[in-house]
Length: 140
Image 1 (cartoon, rainbow, N blue to C red):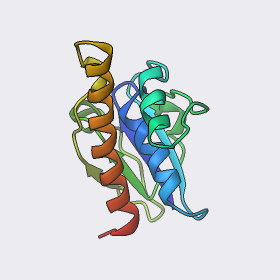
Image 2: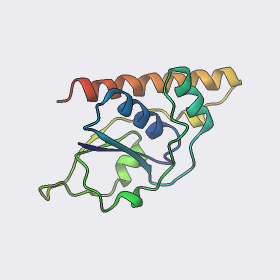
Image 3: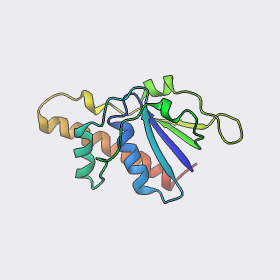
Image 4: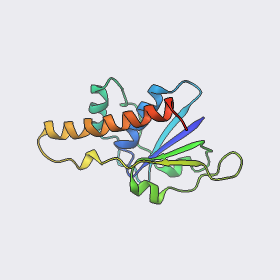
């Protein structure tokens, strides 16, 4: 199974989801993430994931166009902008690939002290973790 996680900048939410989906799935699942734009991997997202024991420091921020020729079994959009601008990916049988959408808050927009910003990242991280667990362990 091939999964693509898509968000606006491929810097926080989709990167976190990619990390958790890899953690919770087995070797039969290939997980990719991309963005409508590529903003670079957010160091605060890397730090938040590390606090939960998941290393995403080696992941890359990628434009969705890179995967245009790939066939995915599932596309997850994790923000409204990505859902609205997600290109159509054909499935193996020529129909449209299954898409699931859940809009998570953008932790990169958090303001306040460094502790408050870290808390915002961790809150979104935990929401994404729970969502990814549900997808892997309780697919519908």
